[in-house]
Image 1: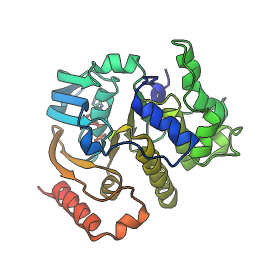
Image 2: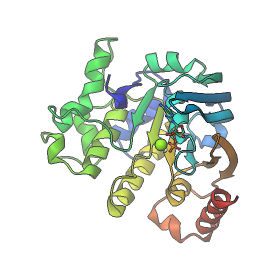
Image 3: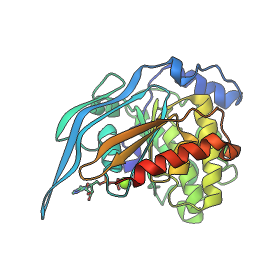
Image 4: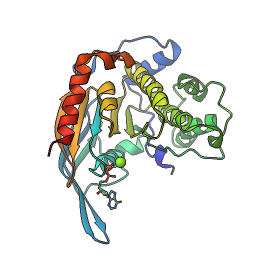
Length: 292
Ligand code: ADP
Ligand code: MG
């Protein structure tokens, strides 16, 4: 299976309806703020991961606890190698923890994966090179259609339009820029309307201007569809701009050291960066990251 399709969802819940509204009207905001909906969507309890390597065991995560509520946008920041991707892989059920409990939407991570509850976007998301942009976005639906009968909540063509790729539907991956390919990956992750989006440094490899546009796109989608989002990044500014909460990880072994609540107003835009509170929050996260 293609990694980026590792978890795909067709769960029918209220966010689906909001998403459908988003696509038909694109301006309806009926979802209560995340703070009023405090049902846990992602729970890691006392989770540890040790990898066996040629040079001995590597303890990537130890006694890690994490709760992300439904419709919350939570980022994890931390230095390279601290275990961020390992956390995401556990949540996505791509990796089993050595110990500890994982609960996703009230089920195990594996059950959630089988229920297609996750859309996953990686830094360099895999697109099948022999399929066009449109066919790549449609791919999860083709896979899921074999599993269960369900109409796509929103057409792949419309999704490509939403991510700014109208007119590029027929192009192949080699004909698209890195930023465009990430847009396709986001459209694909949304194509089956999963309740949870898992993103591992999705914008790390695109240029600054494209990243700005992708931030705006993601905020727009989240603001209207209110997915539960776990967003991994090493970019503090990106984390603060996008998130409800920022979790700071330390390494050896990976643990969550601190959390910062980002009480900046929503909806947010690039202009939030001129808000003194934004600068203060970034400074706090940076201080936590660089402390000994
Ligand atoms: P991050 O995403 O924060 O950069 P990772 O989660 O990728 O960090 O890795 C955390 C630690 O676990 C690192 O020390 C890395 O070398 C190690 N690691 C990750 N995956 C494996 C693996 N499959 N086998 C052995 N060690 C691994
Ligand atoms: Mg990583």
